[in-house]
Image (cartoon, rainbow, N blue to C red; front, top):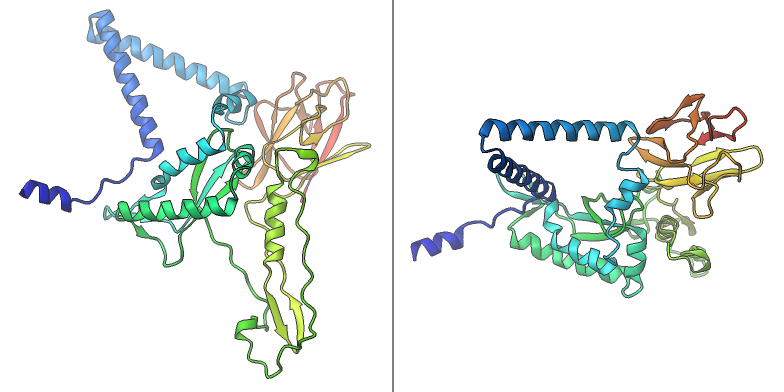
Amino acid sequence: MADRAEMADRPPRPPVPSRSRKRWAIAGGIAGLWVLLLIGTRSIAGGTAVLLLIAAFAVVVFLALRWLGFDRHHPWVRRAATRPWRDGRDVLQLALRHLSEVFVITPSGSLLAPNLVELRMNPADVASLTEVMELEVINSSASELYESKVAAHAARLASSGPVEVNVVADPDVPSGRYRLKQGRRAKVASAPGQAMAPQAAAPQAMAPQAAAPQAVAPPAMGGGGAPRPDWRAYAAYADRSAAPTLVKDVVTVAAPAQAPSPSLPPPLRLVMKDSVAETQVSGARAGRGSDVELPLPDEPTVSRVHAEFTFAEGEWRITSLGRNGMLVNNVPVAGEHAVGDGDLIRWGPHPGALVSRVEIG
């Protein structure tokens, strides 16, 4: 009976992060391979030597692939990371089972749970999910489940605010996958010298004939029946519509809209002789194909999908994907290369190939 009482009083075991599970799986695979080599060679020294040779060969292959430009942004790697057999509901159910992975273990051994969690999914998965259920209902249900996991693991919330789980569309997340990360609440700052309407202490009352702020029409969620909604435009619309109203001298003034999220990359433009292509999407592709985000003129040296632009660590980067390669400021691009305002990109090795100028901001 005493043992049972001790087991009941014992705090629940903290969740094992996904990265730790992968490390344990890799370690188990290496140990299993070593045991097979020991059985095959019937020698500890021989089995260990063969294992070291295999590890060295794997490292050489990995470095060679990185030198050739095969990183996590390469189309083949991104395609291999997808899980096409999962739809939006499968990804959501899988992510909800692992909500406790965002808990942080403090030095004292207790669990700390963030109040705001972002569940990032591929836009196509989010679109398929919202076809059967409203996004607000999904966020509310996920928040309730997260609260139950916090209570089940006896975790402590990071602050006294409400608990929220928000599903966010992120094109950097492969299809069929998800990412859990701690979110940050946006702060709305009022104009200096003005008070918000509930705290207004002015003696004048608001005039009944005061004009209400003009409503903002919501942006289109995708043209021509396209399955990819413009989530950034919808978020910007929501921020403008939720702008608070200030009261001063019986005049209704609309507060300035909330500043754009710092995670939104600055605009990137490719200026050609007769056209301009622009994007703010990390992972945008450039080429002469019809399904790219940055269309280029149809010229012999330009591939259908010639390059990919990603935004990381405060700068735009370009990765060559075409057969003809490219040059940035007359320097051949191998793998990932940073680009800045005013850089010149030549789409092919020939001197007469298409040239575009980069403009940022």
